[in-house]
Image (cartoon, rainbow, N blue to C red; front, side, top):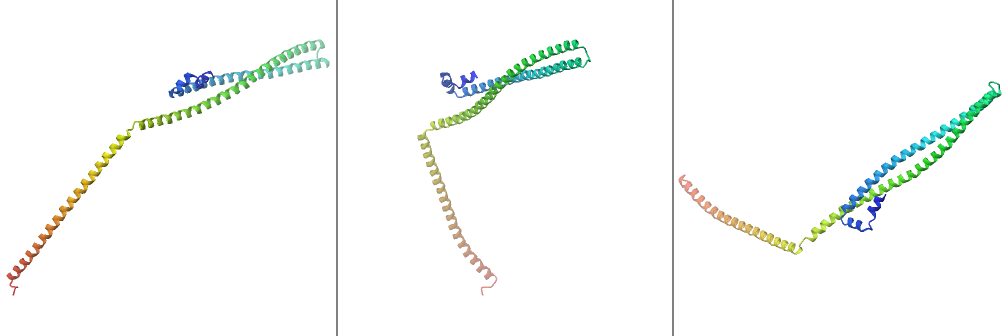
Length: 235
């Protein structure tokens, strides 16, 4: 737990210095979470061991209580047999006394086992609460870490964009755009000029073709007259 007090105590100068580098607190937090998980693993192991002791104490308690009742029953049975004449009273009382002594021993064992059982069960209860709190804390830190990583990505991207924007020379950009506009206007005018030249060339060709078409018609008429004369059709 102490390591997280060091990590998240951002009021100290060391933490403020680490925050300036963003990556450092992330790595420190990741390491802190790994350490907490190791602590959790150790706590779970200790909890299992304490539970085992509580279970063993409970079993010992139950065994001692059972043995105590058994020896009490034997002492009663011995006295009843002596009373019925099945055995000597002196022998029965001696054996019954021994049985009651055993019963007392197991009663004491049961008391001791019960005390240990209650102590271990109390320890189990306390440790279970601490483990639950530790699990919750780990979950909280993991959620906060994910949020912190997301914020780092956003802040880094924003910083890079702002840095790029701050490096843009607006005057040089406007000048470049004006030069581009002039270049485009020049290209458009040149394209229009070539179009006019192409149209002029086409009109001249059409005029020449029309003139030649007229001469061809006159020649055709002359050739027709000559052919008719040759055939004697002029008459």
